[in-house]
Amino acid sequence: MSGAVATHAAEPPRPSAAAAEVAVAGGGGGCGAARKPAATMEHVLLALHETEAEREARIRAMFGFFDAAGRGHLDHAQIEAGLAALHLPPPPPPEEGGGGYARELLRACDRDRDGRVGYDDFRRYMDDKELELYRIFQAIDVEHNGCILPEELWHALVKAVKSGGEGLKAMENLTELCVPGVKPGEAGTFLLELQPMNFSGTLDPNLLVQLENPSFDLREIALTSIEIDDEELARFVEHVDKDNNGIITFEEWRDFLLLYPHEATIENIYHHWERVCLVDIGEQAAIPERISKHASASKYLIAGGVSGATSRTATAPLDRLKVIMQVQTNRITVLQAVKDIWREGSLRGFFRGNGLNVVKVAPESAIRFYAYEMLKEYIMKSKGENKSDIGTSGRLMAGGLAGAVAQTAIYPIDLVKTRLQTFACGSGKIPSLGALSRDIWMQEGPRAFYRGLVPSLLGMVPYAGIDLTVYETLKEMSKTYVLKDSDPGPLVQLGCGTVSGALGATCVYPLQVIRTRLQAQRANSEAAYRGMSDVFWKTLQHEGISGFYKGLVPNLLKVVPAASITYLVYETMKKSLSLD
Image (tube, rainbow, N blue to C red):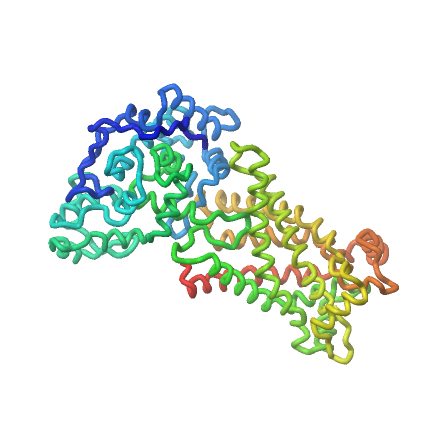
């Protein structure tokens, strides 16, 4: 979103004493305000270096951004599309409930509850939100110098109030600030009636006794809600601080939180940042939206690698069966193929080539992810500095190209795997990977490692397009007809992804057959295919259309177990690695 005109003075403006005054129980904490400052829109304009006309133009421009169709009002779909274009933010995890971020923002703006937000409603929301953000900004800015310093933010996050002898009163102020629905003056009654409750941790009524102890440190309570270290504080400041000068101005604070539909308490703000900003993921990434702040990205790579390896191993017999059927030019049934594999190598024969299939999981995923991020950045820059979203076509292009880069990088491994799976060994003895790779290099040359790459790459963009379109359609249908407008949970999304992936794979399956046949044949053999078109015409001439779908049945049979095993093992690994 475009912010206000940035004309940061050497010394930020000082609002009036009435606007800046924030009395905190027990002294100079940054979070627990004893009474709200007398902030007005004049103070907001002063802090933003804006005139009323400039502010009006900014708000109208933002409304126009969401109302791209020029309807004069906003609905849920328009708000959702606008938030997606701004990369804000992923929906809350299903266990947190709620109807999604866009729905919550619609609810916050839509005062007459008719499902539409006109400009007047939107403007009223902006007025209220900017005043609210200004008040909490002033509460954190204890030096009243027009900016938030990292140490001020630290105190606001983890200390909240001075841990002195006014324990119960200080706790009341903390409750008024951080517990939605508790009004000023009601916190004492609320605390006295308190039962054990979830405060992003456990707050026991026995703490009321401890609060009467002058030496009791309220940070013990604050830290049950917010766990933050120096590194995370630096990341928080770095994300909000757009000009990287080490401080947060009110303009930066406003830009970060203007579309946040909930009450702007310091705890809510931190958890909003935690969900939205800790990780920037690409499409189809197997990284959850809300990651633990104590976990490194390598743990997610481990979890994804183990789940992928387990899934591929469990479905390896179906994969071998699929490949064997794909390369057969004669008519063959699934039962015949199963008997041939068993006769050749008994149970172990069904797992031939699985080692290479497992080995390529981690590098392929990592290359695809990083290539997607780089391509997304390049596309955004090519669209101009004001284009913060690459759009659906951009995501499709970036995803397809990233998949192509990853596939090209690991393709030699894939080719050797196919050669290993289709190697005819009547004696039951198969060559080692080293010997097989050396023979390909010496007898066919290095180009042989990339036979079949072209049809493999050609199938990527249509597969991604079909997969994405069907997935979004099924997800919307589940919201409308099954879940009654609530957001689908992880199992529903897994089901939608399974169906969309299976349909996408079926549509591009002929290209996969052509690729496998090119991979399996030695380049210097007499019956070698001369290229992709040669495979197509010979298959069509001798086998008909059905020849392009050989092995489709085992391929579809492995979709559901593969997706289910991946999901279950991934969730188990997350718990084992403390990623929840």
